[in-house]
Image (cartoon, rainbow, N blue to C red):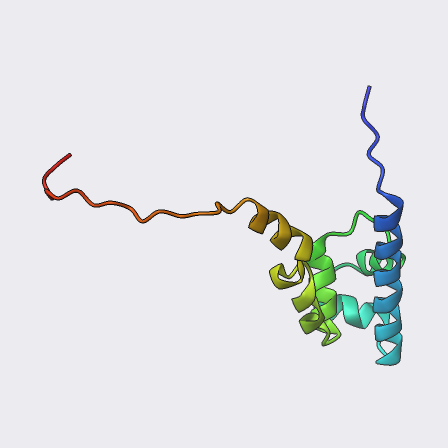
Length: 111
């Protein structure tokens, strides 16, 4: 009996939105699916699946397609540590209130 993995609805919607944005960027540039796929080094079917928001497309395919469209710098903000306010708050709450200086032994040969 296999386990069926489902994608959270919010994640599926985001993937479809990204696919739509990639298609819009490609059509605005007047590029065909074949042109972008060739430049990105992927199959036309993979690019089509990406643009349709299919969840099985690899992150590498997304990165190379964005590069082929000149949009690779738009990935700079993805999961950026400075934008992770929740993570930074959790990290700060785990810090000790006081930190003591480490004490060196007086004898450098003392084990």
